[in-house]
Length: 591
Image (cartoon, rainbow, N blue to C red; front, top):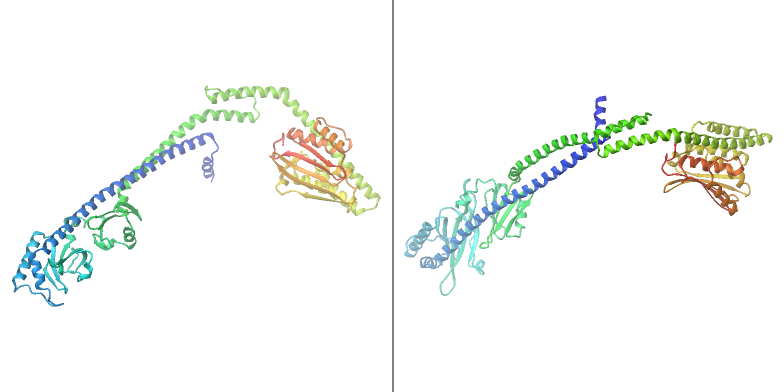
């Protein structure tokens, strides 16, 4: 248990060495930590930029390859649409009704048509299917894979003669995903421009070399048509609708973005309008920056250890002479005024040690020649003033008891004696300073005696906050002033009121005591203020001044000349006494 307390005690910043060590450690550590964080941030950005640039290059290759293939489909379909063999074949099968089959042999025009398709297929093997439609939707041509596409309609070709559509591969397997581009071109009759039918060329995207290379890639690649239809994906099972929506909302043609910790790169084709996209998963990105994270962590850890060692050594070298000076000062505090500090350097600490030696010489001189004599004088003066107060209020109280006894008021005599006993116990206190609460209780005992003597003739109100009652003041500084109110201000009006309240004003803690008595004339007030301003020696008991001058001197002896007693009055209306004490407790001597 004690060991645990000692460990906790070490962590309390109560020495200069620990403060220097902790300060240096924090400064060095946070500088290195900031450098590591900034470096890690920039390196991470650099890695992301490099990954994005590499992905964009791959996407550009995919886009260029797709554009090339679409351009091939465009040129092949255009050439076919202008051959006599295809035009003659469409004219021949123009009137074949819906759902009737078109014969493959039996006519030269049919043979010439299939010979044309066979030659074209050998010339462009990437085109897996070559078809033509008549105006009734009947289909004829060469087919390697069964791909389904809606039958084209003439009204769909009013604005453009070509359409790129997405076909469904019905014969797909696990090794052949569903990714077919169907290129359709309207064929018209030369001269008249009347529609004869359509040419349809099917391109299997997964047969393209650049696409096949992506099947084993950990990244996800997507190809979208301008209307948002997904044309191609090498990982169709990894797609989610939120990411797809984010991609489709991107309006820029080329760039990168981070979404849900995934890096998305994209580029769009000016030729087809298709958008090619790559998605690098979070796991793959983290693998790229993990080494940087480990290096940064090791750098910060090593730097922290070095900073602790360096700070400990530097703080020890700085604080060692200061600790020596501190130990010497503690011995002085214990009463050894002959202690001297060894001056071991010429820096500020060495100069401070030399100044302390000079100070100790001066202190010894002051103690022997001035300070001891001054303390004895101030202590004797304080006790003399205090003794002037105690007999004064005791004499007045005994006089009250005597009057009550002569009147035969035994109950009031008993109550007065009880209150007097309380005041005796307070008067016999050996301490010179009490809390304001204790002084107020003494005043209340005094007021109890006066209420017995003068029932229903006065009222005392005390408005003192709870926190002010804990304030420490010299003993016997309230009751003599309140006693003066009874002696010189009260009982000249029908009803007498005494108000006691406190106030904090800047550097002062003020205790106000105001009565509604007859006050004093202006000249008498000026004389009283002058006597208070020039009061420096104890005075004899000369009436009302005993409760003011002596208290004023005691406060000044305790706190200094900035504090004391202030008086104010309006003749015929009120008289006010204010005790000016320091707002911060224990500012005075010996408090």
